[in-house]
Image 1 (tube, rainbow, N blue to C red):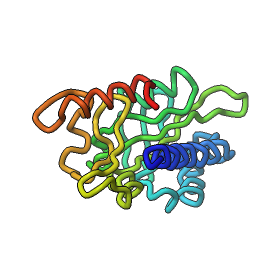
Image 2 (cartoon, rainbow, N blue to C red):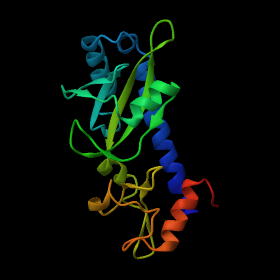
Image 3 (cartoon, helix red, strand yellow):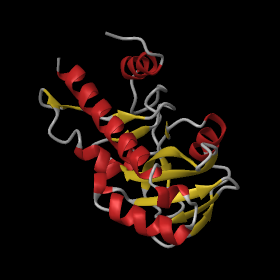
Length: 193
């Protein structure tokens, strides 16, 4: 019952972030792809929401502009490529942010122009600390805890921050016994109770 409750809480959080980003991406100022208009609208709509580490817009060539005033080449990032190619929202695997240097999970949604053609990608970083706060109060017995794992098996949120973005808990190793790795692999495959 506790595991299902944690899964429900996680799903609600993920859905909430994506809904918030979709709403922001539908604003005329954001759809304009004019950075000065976008930045103002995004600051008003999103700053403080979900404790985002940074918020940014990526044009179709892969150039990203952050509310932290950085311009980055993001053309090779999975979230950009997936949203550009599928025109669907995407939640990325844990990664190190080029903009902030923090361990983050990226939430990305398409930006459609006036003619409903894709014009860009709106994305936000959520840090491992923010994600870990969702699970801080959850425990099983004296030593059990909840953690969040990306689709690639890498820890996205964990009580031990040193393994976030580094440890693949779907692979057996010195700190990952087979029962845990097997359970994670089954969960990633959509199997389980």
